[in-house]
Image 1 (cartoon, helix red, strand yellow):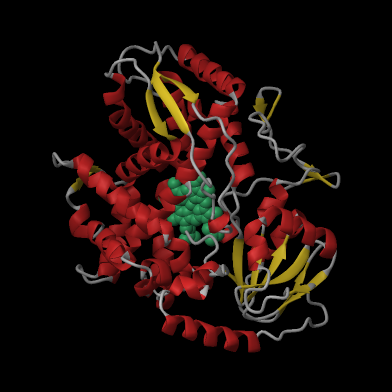
Image 2: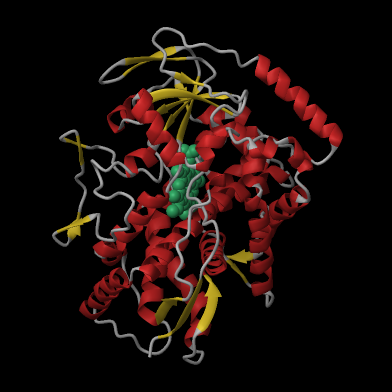
Length: 506
Ligand code: HEM
């Protein structure tokens, strides 16, 4: 939920973004204090220290401009481990995939300390800091996103997709033209919300979902600033937007919805044990879950569609694969929305899965963060590495995902990269050795995304529906870049948008 919560990015703290001369002066003074306190030198056994010429911000601007290019240059110069000064924090980056396990397994490197700060800043959840039992109980609810519980969620996702698309299927066969990003936002938000939180029974269902989505997008847009430590009062009307969202997700509000998922029901039982019924932190917990379930799924869906629209041959292979499965399971594409796939059947679509994995390989820019609780030495395969209390350590998978030794022509979209002889490909090598970790868009170890199976199932189902029922075409076929303002926070959004059109297959 917390991918990259440190607040390493200078942009929000540039004085002009604070708004008034007084605040700018305060920011200047703060900067001075921070500069003076940042006179650190490298100690024996520590990784190379790269501070850059800009006090406090260090290397943040360069990294945000071209994360991959800059990190690759540093890797060539300093090797696979180095410490960067970023926004007043010292962060040691671990780039060699054979070193990941030592970081993930080290008990003195804490994910929870890191995540608690984030939950307080972004969602105003405070109790997690002081109550480890609450943390454990909340984590126990993640089992309801997996195994047999996932089958129930999957069925519900398909029902909700049906509700989203059935009205379209009954329409005429003319083309609908839309921008891709708002399309993905609407479909993913509505499907995810109704799958996890249930259906709105009132007549004004569409209005409720649209308003909730719009508020959510306003919140999400400013979330990196909030996460970087800017007080919410300085972020326009964000506080009232967040308060409204939290109010929409109280136990009382959720009681009006039908079909709460098991994960939400269990969460409610736990939250009722730890909070008074009217405590606003209950809604804040739900906002956290809703945010985690939507914020990365939308851009993943966006990039999946974008790449497929620009690679018609890949789209044709996927259509064939899906058609073949539907035929072999005796399903005919009649009028209306009638397809049904089990999880096993969905899993058998290897080219569909490979396409999504390839999109995640290309587009994921999450860092896997840990807080160093005390001075310690990491014993790595090739060297020992001293870490300093109070710093952060980050496993940075984008370097792995774009390593030409592991993935040939890593900058290219190859939809079948994760297949071999028509089957799933799971073996990748570096320096002649088989890699344990070669694909990490969902994190690693204790912080691994508990919603990863649901995310994959949801995106697969949505693509199956779109490819089965619709003709899809890109209109302005222009290249898009990733917008790195969320760098280290998950899947970046695009820097602009493209128009596409869709119509029911004749
Ligand atoms: C393609 C979509 C998704 C991607 C790429 C993704 C990625 C991630 C990552 C990288 C983390 C770890 C954060 C960290 O290390 O700081 C995470 C955490 C989390 N994700 Fe996802 N996620 C996705 C979809 C979902 C969905 C659909 C859910 C549904 C409930 C979900 C729920 C969560 C939760 C609850 C956490 C926090 C876990 C904790 O507190 O330890 N995610 N996600």
